[in-house]
Length: 130
Image (cartoon, rainbow, N blue to C red; front, side, top):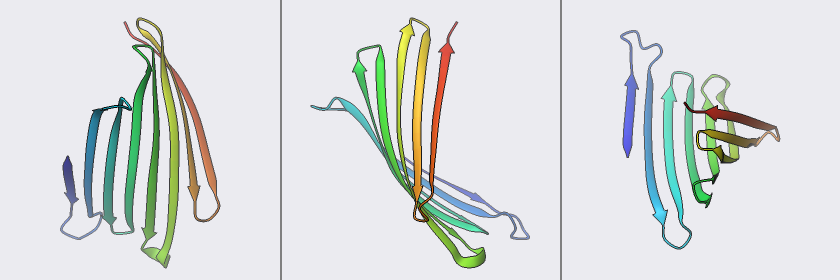
C-alpha cells in the first residue's frame, strides 16, 4: 500500500509532505506468522524524518495467546541548528484471551538513540467486550 499527504498554506507556513508505504505478508508458510514492512518519509518546515520498520506477529496458542515483535529505525533531522538524531526502537507485545470477551494486553517498547539515551515503556490494558 501507498499513501501520501500534502499540507500547504498560501503563506508557506505549516506545510508538510508525508509519504507512507507498507507491504504485508499474511500466513507465511512454515513459520506461520504475519510480517509487515513499512517506510515513512516526512518533510516539514522544521523537521525531516525517515522511518523504516518491520513487524512480525504470530498466534502462539490458538485462539488464546498472540505475540508480536517489531523494530523501527528512525532518523530525524531538525532544520534549526542542523541537529540530527537516529533511534532504534524495539517492541514486544502479547495478548491473552482470559475469557470469551475478556483480553489482557502487555506491551514493552524501548527506544535507543545515538546520543546514548534510552527510553523504555511498559503498558498493560484489560479489555472487556460486551
